[in-house]
Amino acid sequence: MTQAYQNYIDGQWTDASDRARTSNLNPANTREDLGTFPSATRADAARAIDAAQRAFPSWARTPMPQRGEILTRAADWMHARRDEIGAALTREEGKTFAEARGEVARGVSILRYYAGECLQPTGEVYPSAGAATFLFAERVPLGVVGLITPWNFPCAIPTWKMAPALAYGNTVVFKPAEITPLTAWYLVSAFEQAGLPPGVLNLVVGRGSQAGQELVENGQVKAISFTGSNQVGTRLAATVAQRGGKAQLELGGKNPIIILNDADIARAVELTVQGAMLSTGQKCTATSRAIVTREVANDYRDALAARVKQLRVGDGMQSDVYMGPLVSADAEKTVLEYIALGKNEGARLVTGGEKLRGGEFENGFFVAPTIFDNVTPDMRIAQEEIFGPVVSVLQARDIDDAIALANHTRFGLSASVVTRDLNLALRLIREIEAGVIHINSMTAGAEPHVPFGGTKASSSGLREQGKAAREFFTEWKTVYVDPL
Ligand code: UN1
Image (cartoon, rainbow, N blue to C red; front, side, top):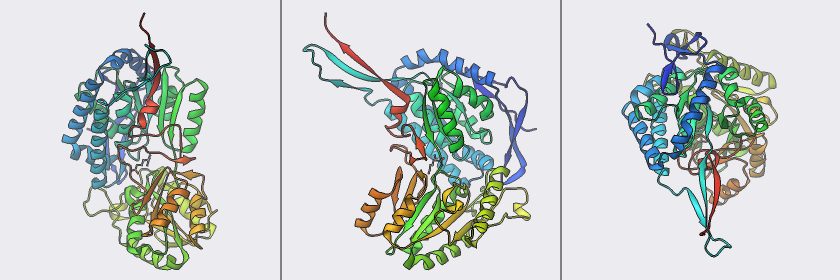
């Protein structure tokens, strides 16, 4: 018997009003069913919003240090179950257990960081033109916020939205991606076990077109934080803006690694492989373009191909596997279409390029790690987000050309530069259009206490994480106090 999971509304685990249920299948082996989940309707989401609205005044008045203690208890609960939650994450999303466990550990760090933020100043005192005036401005919560999160980081991304939202006094309706609801269930359970009052955090598992749409359109929801596709995100932001709400969007990327003449080729290859192939390339921060100066291009490409050919692909629960499956049949189809497109566009397939079949691959969505070279800047595989284990190698004439190529994209999330030359590194830090720059580390990765987000089409609205998150999840209240 597979377990039947429920939504969490107003402190109660509850079925959706529509009885339809969806099975949560393991992308490494679709014969494994991890349980059935409800499909929340708009009415269910509206009930969750009402509950969050009712819970708001008292949560906003709860002393911040007390809110912080609840975050700490949720962190402790997750930390104690990190192996169990990590395994659930691997089995529903596909990334390796080492990565999944690391992601749970990241979730724990994020909760602890925002527990600490609950003891930080909440405003500023200003000088006033009035001799006796006490003038201050305080950051106050917004009210009900909606969190719409993707499947690729089903623990870290919801946590980095939820932790600041709750710490700063908002109440939350959380709609995770419907294909990774089990990690979301653990996350909400952590807060339930930590003693979060009813209605402060509500979980609605369902489709974007139903539960998601209600969050976007319901006037009680003051802000939506969304991570996902550009197509959905920009539509969502327009609707939210029209009703006076606030939106924070984290969208796509086409992140380059730039390899300059002086780079250590072995290191450059390792950073490319980590950035491109971990999580099967399914990160908005994944490396998808390798821009390499002409003199070292052949050496780099050959070394990269040799390394990629060695990567062990398989079920992420096996300890020797480097790269798991794609998350779903749809994701696999999209990646295979891009590979076909790359060939048609005239790029040269160096390695990979096919679906892996038979044996351990038979019931999963496995695609071989893939490298293209002879990629030119306007090819669609050099411009569009593939979200899979595919790297396009582009040759640059010189450093100016490398910078121009790096910026020749509508995205601007992250970039990585491999060089020992400090002057060059400083120049690239200045000239590359990206929200996050790595010198000699991979394009992916985000520590909890620093701002995270992109420029150009990669993000819109205020940054996530660190102290920056406060700007999105609060607003100013300015107070003049005069004696009578
Ligand atoms: C990371 O690189 O570790 O959806 C985080 C994504 C990004 C988060 C990346 N918003 O992949």
